[in-house]
Length: 349
Image (cartoon, rainbow, N blue to C red):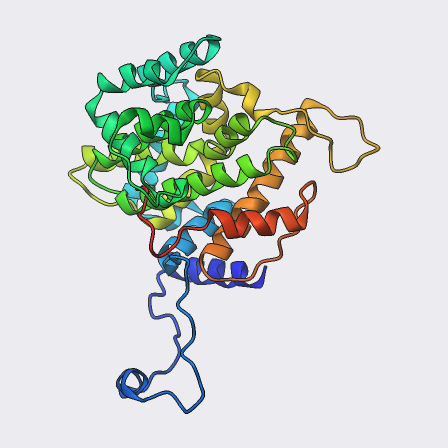
């Protein structure tokens, strides 16, 4: 995990205000010579990287979300940043933290899925009543994450491509994402988190047998594994909008994620009735230990965090170790190759 540690160090230096990070020395003529000089006889140009790589700022941001860092001294933050964190902590402490309502469309889908006679036309009728959601669904169905070599413009084809059991989680994610994009800040960050969540969903779907879940359940588990990212980015976006667009520092945003992430996650899944996805019946790391809800939850959370870190490192061009307890190494390696976005594909966000 050397590349992860390197990215973490770089991100922390930036949070501490050191913006003049050391870089590789460059020769002003290098780019000219590199572009125009012919290749030596018999030497072929290297093949283009088929993966659309994660940009450095995004890599730093996503890896730092997973980093286990002690709480920061809030006095080192600006008054504005301290007020932001204190406001959220007070709301959580006084049970006034507002968890976004589960979208009506998601509730409708929940009812449809509980029926034994559901078909694509039922979903199409629901999406027709929400043009914005329909546009998001078609855009997602045409993204690289669904192998969109042939574009679709028809709602029924989009529903079929995405799949009935995946639609509810996707509607929740799209609703949370749209809530943030309506605000004045953090648009880049929600784009990064959206792409990562989609990759986690696809990865978990392919590892569903190792998770002892159906592919649809595994997809939703991966998609909403860190649903608190969306909820807290939404709260931060609303705070920025209510303060004339004044930006929250990266350090304050990360501190809010560290201090409020776990309780906001638990509060969200309870409010939305998704607890079943958080505690699948898995064998603990120690096979001789009797499984309990507590250690099962710790195990699945830890395994998915390891998977998420490997995805980020691989996406950014690294070569992480694909070993995760409970998952086959070959299976994880195949998943990495299958879910990373290609440079030729469209972005989902």
